[in-house]
Structure formats: C-alpha cells, structure tokens
Image (cartoon, rainbow, N blue to C red; front, side):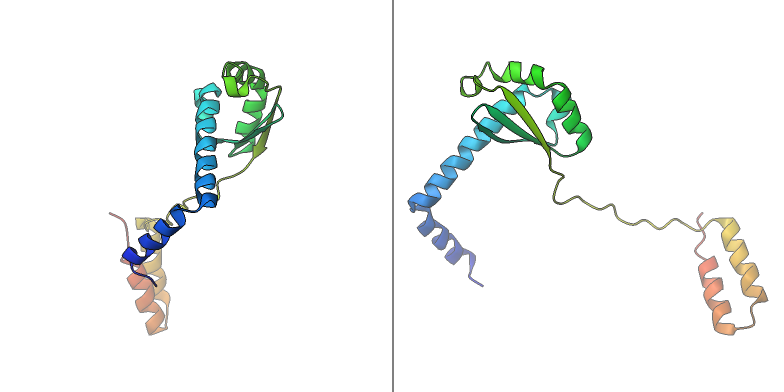
Length: 148
C-alpha cells in the first residue's frame, strides 16, 4: 500500500491528462444540469430524485421508488413547463422517469426486546421443574435479564 503522500503525487500526475480533465468537466456539467432540473421538480419530490440525461428533447430522471416515480409522471407537464424556461432545456418535449433504488441503505440495528416480568416468572417456574442442573442454571440466568 502506498503512503498518502505517494498517492497524492500519483493523482497529481493524472491531473495533467486530457482524458481526466474532460471527464471532470463533463461531471461538473452534469452536476450543474442536475441542479437546474431539480429546481423545476416540486420540493416534496426532490429527495431521492436524480437527473440522468437529456438527449434529443427527452429528459430522463430517476426516482428512488415507484411511488415517487408515479408522482413525477403525474406532474410531468408542470415540471416540463418550468424546465423549458431554462435555455438548456427549452426543447424538452418528453419526460421519462426510471426507478433506481438506492444502492446502500443503512440497516437498522437489531434491538433485542427486553424480557418482561411475566416471561421472567415463567422461566423461573420452568427452571424449578427442570431436573437437569445446567439447563436450570441457564433458565435462571435468562430470567435474571428482566426489564425494570
């Protein structure tokens, strides 16, 4: 693994290549276009909506779920009317919406439900009826995990 200073030098060397400069310029142009398109989208639909492309009068957006995509399609005439006021998008005549769910979604941490007093009482009762000594110890230990 290279040290950070060596990694920076490698990136600096790439910064001079025309291909990388062109790629960065195209990414910046796409970011600006997305910014302008999202100003035409109603505020309640902006989160989870992304600008994909605009080719030959066809504007393509992506939504994070089907419900949001349907709402965008339902309000497409309103969105296109607003977007046509922008010089770059004055010839937009069609709006296409694709569903693209987010790649990574934070999974909620599994939270153990605390043991109720009733369940703790039942575990202690069962431990009293058990002949196996080790099983009895385990049941009593589980019963001690009661919520307060």
